[in-house]
View 1 (cartoon, protein in one colour):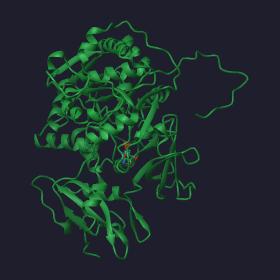
View 2 (cartoon, protein in one colour; view 1 turned 45 degrees about the vertical axis):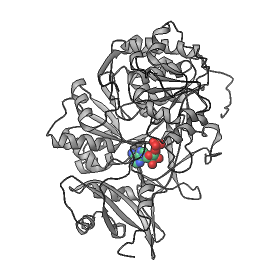
View 3 (cartoon, protein in one colour; view 1 turned 60 degrees about the horizontal axis):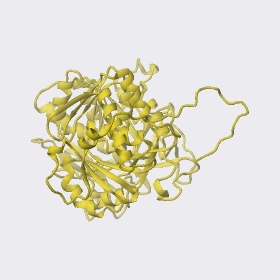
View 4 (tube, protein in one colour; view 1 turned 60 degrees about the vertical axis):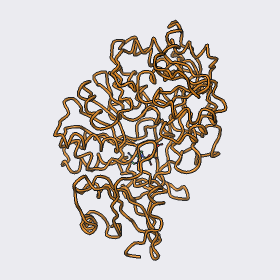
Amino acid sequence: MAQYAKSPLMGQMMSQPLLISGLIQHADRYFGDSEIVSRRVEGDIHRYTYRDCHMRARRMANALGKMGVKMGDRVATLAWNGYRHLELYYAISGSGAVMHTINPRLHPEQIAYIANHAEDQYLFFDMTFLPLVEAFAAHCTTVKGFVMMCDRDRMPPQSKVPNLMCYEDLIAENSDKYDWPVFDENSASSLCYTSGTTGNPKGALYSHRSTVLHSFASVMPDALNVSAQDVVLPVVPMFHVNAWGLPYSVPMVGAKMVFPGPALDGKSIYELFEQEKVTFSAGVPTVWLGLLTYVGQNNLKFSTFRRTVIGGSACPPAMMKTFRHQYGVDVVHAWGMTEMSPLGTAGTLQSKHADLPEEQKQAILEKQGHAIYGVDMKIVDDSGKELPWDGKTYGNLLVKGPWVIERYFKGEGGNVLQDGWFPTGDVATISPDGYMQITDRSKDVIKSGGEWIGTIDLENIAAGHPAVQQAACIGVFHPKWDERPLLVIVKKPDAEVSKEELIKFFDGKIAKWWTPDDVVFVDALPIGATGKVLKNRIREQFKEYKLPTA
Ligand code: AMP
């Protein structure tokens, strides 16, 4: 960790470390009766308050102590968004141990790899994951016990899982008298492995300081803009970069929290939105696709839903327009990554934009947005030279800030920084007034005749066609140009469109040589563990594809 010079005259304010336990203490003291509502894996709706959550987190912290969990020990979870998962967020990190959230959509072998790499001491899981845990438990070399997150009467009479304990027993058997320990704010608080489309997943190890600072920054008006007046439903899973920090930032502001559990289909989400008067939500575009389809097909409206943050992959402008114009829901397009806790930028307007025509406002909002204070960014060429902010020149996007990774857990991948900046692997432009736009992941960029074609633009245009449900664009081999764009399309149910019509749809919307050479129609796109389209899988599928132009 970097060391800095000390002034002979130091400030004289209280030196109080920024600790995660402080967030739940604050929520209890000032918003104690605010509700936390969860759709449980058991199928019912559970409700209680921040005060209850804090009390049960203290009981669990006592249980962890008795189980021998010490400061710095990793404790894993395999769970949906729900109140017990939230309790663990506070019990584990608050007591000085490290909350390691594992993505249950991964293959059992990958889960065992991650648990062993992290040296997890215990693993807590939602009861629906019992078969999954049975599949990998024997391969976990460091886990001393498994805790099923349910009541005693839901426990299996017998199981292959060694040392299987019941969550509610631990809660019932332990006292709620617990003083959150005070320690160095740079201590590790939680661990999250990157999705790892190539090679083994690598761990991003957050600290209490980075997490609390990220929470402060993320609730700001031009970031997520969350307040005590909101009812927040995080669709983004608590096992994917800490649900973009919402389990920390929502208690920080005392907003009512609504957890969807495993039911992420359009109907279930819509019903919860309406029943609980949700005002704000956050998720990846694929989830919103399901919600918008359900709402559209059933001719429904949202009564209270007013704002959503969309990120994780590029939000198609057509989706943003549907939300805004058809349903009156503002979309904040945000960008970030596991290595950034995850928030880096958010797209909002400024006072100087107030009189712009609607189309120009929309064009600004479609970008990934402005750096949130705390994050700095730049674009560079392959030799590391900084490139101009002209909104046209694109280059490798580098970032730094107090919630940006310095190195991966256990030094995997070696020194990842470039002159103190973290290379994101994304390619972007930055406008003169600081709005960043991702053109692609560097490994997805199409290299055509020595020039680059960004696939996100092409996908966004295709997604704007009324017959298109989802679009992905990949580069396939071309004997003259090396690579040319192939568009892979999922049509809307009952919609029809021809290849020729789709290719013509690009006329005038983009440089002619960017136009896709061909279109293929598929039933579905492969979606990865974090809800993103798996481009590498599509490239594999069409690796032998012969373009008509070849
Ligand atoms: P992850 O670490 O799994 O959250 O993935 C981070 C990556 O997702 C980023 O490096 C981007 O490539 C992509 N990503 C996240 N948000 C956006 C966005 N708003 N637009 C385009 N790509 C995004």
